[in-house]
Length: 542
Image 1 (cartoon, one colour):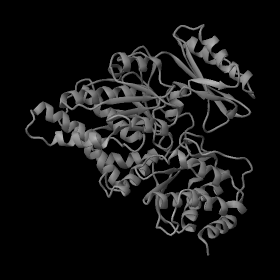
Image 2 (tube, rainbow, N blue to C red):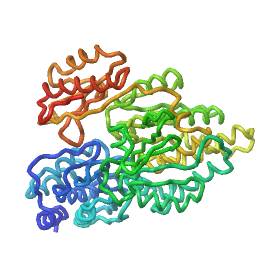
Image 3 (cartoon, one colour):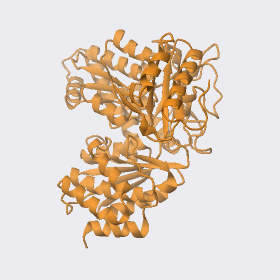
Image 4 (spheres, rainbow, N blue to C red):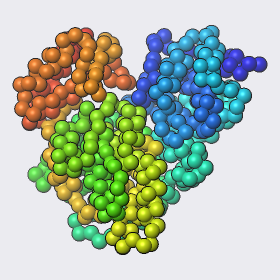
């Protein structure tokens, strides 16, 4: 029987299309209510096999909805080096998800023809899932899709999203990037962390962290990691699975609400951090001596990483170009600090990991972070070779070689495939310890402009279109002019509106000289969006 016909028959019998609305594969893959996802995940299983045949390697499929509410879920595909599926293939995912059951064979045949895929080639797909109640059944739908297309499935069960990205990369590099198992992930990161933190002498840095795990998959995985770390870092956890996923906790809640999560009694002197639901976002925070909540978000993490790596580059005498990639959500103060003080080039791209990751590849060392805490560092093949050669050159003086060795070890601690809360947390702790810094020391590099983010519910988010890395709107007519007029009335004012990639809302971001003004500016811009982009429900208010 034709492989596509068999795939369609299994789909009709076990995973028929049950969603009338059309959906689009975006930055986060597909995300929606879990009860609408079954046929989509089955079809992504089919596509992951097609993608594996096309790439001639192991691809990945992850079941997660990250920071979304517990009743949601999602699916996304992973490329050979642990990167996101190429943008060019997103249209195939969208077509497969929306086609009627009786036309499924036609779409599969079209993909095979357009990409010249030999369907007789072997294919392997590695899959993982988060802890949502719906994830197990959805992963079974993915397995059905993979097996219907005669693909081999490696089911790794519960994983953080970055762990699956890491494993897929390891599988396609013959183990050069690391051992392609969950245990291999813990061994690689812990070995690098322990090496970097041995014989440290600190006075101000306290090796104790208070960590909010968002009641997500990061909770059991963090517990497993701790077994490898010993007593080098004491981690006190909260929201470790006993509560509702992402509810009043997690990195997204902390970032947007600018307050500590439930379950954490924040006091001055405590260094705190939050993961998101699938373990790919990280933010830090603390309470000042005056009792004020202070957030150390992705911008602060990016500048911490970049400054540390820049110092090591200078000490190791390596001539490599480093750049930092941000989105429009990056605080204006951070961009000014990186440009004017650190003297490191900054690039701005549209929101979405795929855009940041791609742009970071333009540098020998590319640091990228979204303000929400999702990010990592990429080292080009040339940079990796030069760093490792320098680290093994015994003719160098001790200071130069030690800096190169530290750089090489940091490369092993960083998960270069995708933003990884566990890896990023260990890097932050390593840098703070090496500098003997508290959170206050870290935060003092520059002062963020007060900001506010709000969501405006709209009939159709696609009515809003943007340009200039999503910093300006082109549709609906008159919206950008209205935003410009409002912003002009605020000192240090900056604001933009962009359609969400995952829900029918338009996201508004605003900065100003005071928090009260940032709140007011966000509300005024939100009202313009509401009035000109067919807002629904309650109007925004301060």
